[in-house]
Amino acid sequence: MTWVKGLAKPLVIGLLIREFLAPFTGHPWDFEIWVRLGVLLQSGTNPYSLLPSVSGLSFAPYASMTSISYPPLPALIFAVIYRLYTVLGSVSPFLYYFLLKQPMVLSDALVALLLFRLLAPRGDEDRARKIASLWLYFPFAVIVSAMWGALDPIALLLTLAALYSFESNRTNLSAVFLGFAVFMKLMPVIFLPVFLIDRKLTLNRIPFVATTIAIPALGTAIPTLVFGWGFFNFYNAVSYQAALPAFGGMSIFFPLAFTTPPDLLTFALGSLWLPALLLGYVFLWNKKFGLAEGLLLTVLIFSVSRTAVPEQWAVYPMALLLVTLGGEAWRHFVAITGIASAFLVTNNALLVRFFSPSSLAAFNWDQYVDNASAFSDFRYALLVAFSTLFFAEGISVITGKKSFLFAKLKVISAVSARGVLPSLVYLGIVSATGGLLDFTVTKMITDWKLAIESHVFLGLSWLSLYHIMLVVVFESVAFIVVSFSWKNFSQSVGLLILLTSLNVAASGLALVIFNLLDGAPILATTPIYLAGSLVVSERFFLTFVLLTCGLGILYLAEIRWSVLLVPKALRRAFQAVR
Image (tube, rainbow, N blue to C red):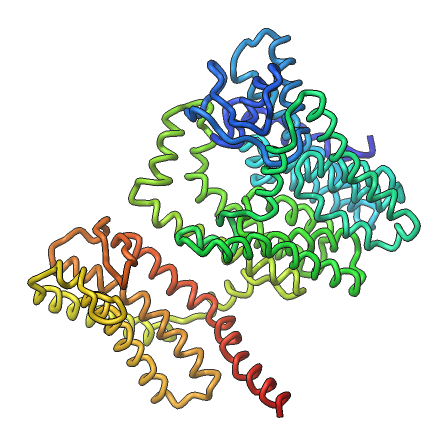
């Protein structure tokens, strides 16, 4: 009973909260896959094939769905759960949903107990108990396990069990737990080198690797051969995860989701995590971090170098930050929790999406808000902003710096109205001038077909050249202001970045002024022909120029540092050549 000493009450309450939510909620894609897998595996269906809808149990109206992209352990577990559901009489789909959630819910509760066991031997049992209680009541963990139905709480539990066993000098058991974590979800394999780096494995590295790899390898090979699934689809699923051809989630590369990058660039960015991790392992070897700190740094290096980072992955650094709590770790935990929670709520339509199992209306509303409503562009802008904050906070943990988010909040809180006034005046003047100029010029155009479709210079139309001219004019104004500011070079660079950011925002506000003068809707889906073949809606344009301005100002110090780094690097290169 020492595992639950003083934790009985929060454990019961935490479980009750999760069990109450479990039957009626679920992610309309991920959890729907679990629903279908449990049923379809009864007939020997390949879990790596397209999954058809299951009458009476499916709640998401997809005719077919792609399946899992990791080893078959989850599919086998869900098949057993469906068999249990039929034994109980197939009473209601909500009972099936409830049973499917039990591995996630119970794992999440056990994560809290493992946090207590990991922290208690470090000298402060009372603090360990508070942290365990925190996790039991932790909204983010509750949503991911009980509402989403994600597999990450199970993989996190097995990873923490491997860490606990390792620190208890039971390395063989540690390898077993890590092997099952990889068998559950491939991502924990990134932790294997971190365990191997630890000096405790000087003579046992080969057995540790063999055990960790054998469990998912044999666990995948045996059912694949027995049931005749074949390895082709499994290989495609794993290779898809290795070099993601998509951009999204809390990745710093999320904005590329709105573009069509060259295939080579997509492949290069999708594979970036591999050299990043290799460099990270070298760094850990040289610095001799503790195991928990090494696991934390590894998952963050992996996350900041991926082109797609699902928000539920945040449970790994959150839990590991609690294990390593000390110094700046608490602030990093609060910051990552705040950023990931904001992303979670925004990305999942205020959590309405998770009530799809109970209501088709919730599913339809989520689809509308996600794709067609007036809020969709604003939603994507917020997601981009949160993804940059997650990246910056992750980098601050990796580099051992103070919390990025807390540092920025401190700077923002110190800003006075008098300090903001000059920027607002500049923004107002440029916006009004741009709006009036745009209104005047467009009223002079008599042949819009010629203005848009002509090829005057470098394949650009008259309208494209006009927009480029506006950028040059207002950016020249910014250079003139900087020139007469009489600041040193570093300050001048910062001022130029600020004014450029304000010019970007002014282009969107000028559009608002233009529409007011023209009597048109302010936030419309009317297309704007910017330059060349680049065409966006007015609403998209306004949303993302304001976002760009905000990010430019937020990251002004970092952008200025990067700009100032260029002449220093060139000077050093020139000196090296001489």
